[in-house]
Image (cartoon, rainbow, N blue to C red; front, side, top):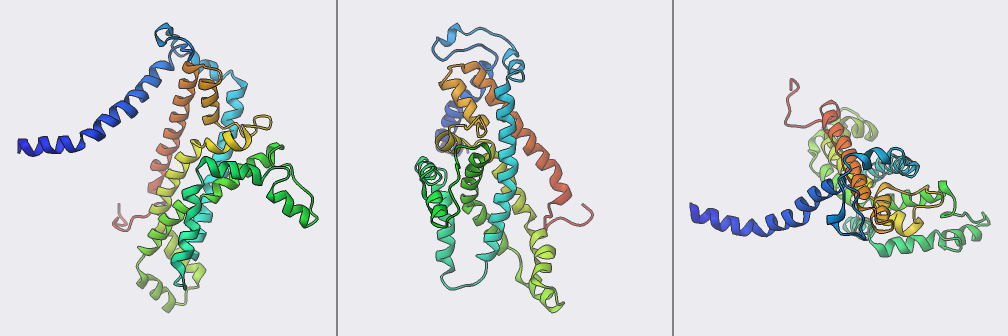
Length: 296
């Protein structure tokens, strides 16, 4: 028995070592740094303990308040739109059509490429003043749009990039659709229920656990979005796409305020934790699990 435990411990030791060194230690170290005035150009030993001054100061920081509002706007726009679009595509790709596997692969590809730096660079050129979108608009005699130079359209370009990466959520939805028993739809057909009624009475309730999972994942990912605002818009114009992860990066590596950046990171962590906790608290009110009885 002892030998088996030793062997098991050796197998999982790479994960434990990696978790402690690259996750747990930086996580706790950032909390300690957030309570200091640490500067990236100085020795960490020169940092002074300042308590909660970084946290108190950020709420007096107009840039932080704007970045926080922009981040919430981005999350509230992208998460429901991406979930709705991914569910729509999953429903369409759930039909038995010729070469359906090819279509599923093609629609999933943007999720593999979408978060990369290369795609963000391409996206910036597509929405540039002389980019592909404006060339198409000029060809249709509709005039060009300053996509990356206006606050409203700059955010739109980032939201559109986020929606383009719907493939991962779509695959999860598709797996959930496959798990719904077909005899439920057969019974509904016999009762004369329309496709729309079947969707809202059968598909959507039985898909709520999958919706819940995708919702949590998309909330976390949207709050952590960095590549888009950094590469495509640079946070501009007028800080209209200055998401909180970009502010954290610039405070740490542009202004070298390591303590302040650590405090911002913890605020972002707490925001994500609160939204996740609220989602778990609310699931009993709208998530249906097939194994649950009505009395539970």
